[in-house]
Amino acid sequence: MRLSKGFVAVAAAAVTVLGLSACTDSAAPESSVDVEEVADFQDGTTMARLAEAGEITIGTKFDQPLFGLDDGSGTPQGFDAEIGKLVAAKLGIPASGITWVETVSANREPFIQNGDVDLVIATYTINDARKEVVSFAGPYYQAGQDLLVLEGNPDGIESVDDLAGKKVCTVSGSTSEANIAEYVSAPTDIIATDTYSNCLEPLRTGAVQAVTTDNVILAGLADQNEGEFEVVGAPFTEEPYGIGLALDDTDFRMFVNDTLQDAEDDGTWDELWEATAGKVLETPEPPAIDRY
View 1: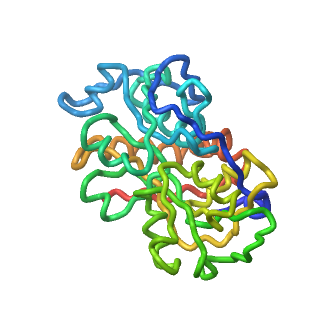
View 2 (view 1 turned 60 degrees about the vertical axis):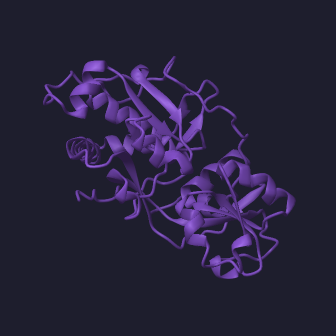
């Protein structure tokens, strides 16, 4: 992944904690992707159901700059939101037909399993454990877990190897929480909360010495409050972001994979990236789609 110099050098920053947990489909900004004519989908498929209804429900993050940040009306802005609009457009559904549901790390699988959403596009790392309960299309982006520290790095944290005896904040139920466990001195050194933005105040006050999650999420927070924090710039995992959907809905998964592949091939993926996350980060090569 190619990152801009600003990602490594610029600190990460706070974003106002968003208390919105509802969803909305009103006044949704349209995507640059053209809405397609409704295709003749096979009866009984998820595609046919959604296209006929002209509506789709998508779960995403509401507190992550560059990927999914609430614009104040319950409508997320960012790369994940644009990928959601891309899939909807391929079903003949405009952005105004999307109902967005705030989805945090801990409720992504339950929302899919319970049918609360049709898709989850929420900086959602594909892994084998999750594939036991939901299906994934993609990946559509490759991230890596990193560390966020105070500007100037007063605790001298250069990598995860420097975390012994230090406290780290992350999100409950995330892969970041699981990954960081082997680098801290004790389980009690991990402070878990519901959103990454809620980790920022403990970092400011010294209650924790680092925040950990995917580097692009930290870069987005950095872009919000320049000068408060910095990203260490030493990623220690690979985090393939996928689109979550109902387990064993193979037809829908293949449709979403085809949509992503077309977007990579015709340059649409680059356009969506550059209009969102690309304002801070350089444009990477899209990852190869895993058609398991």
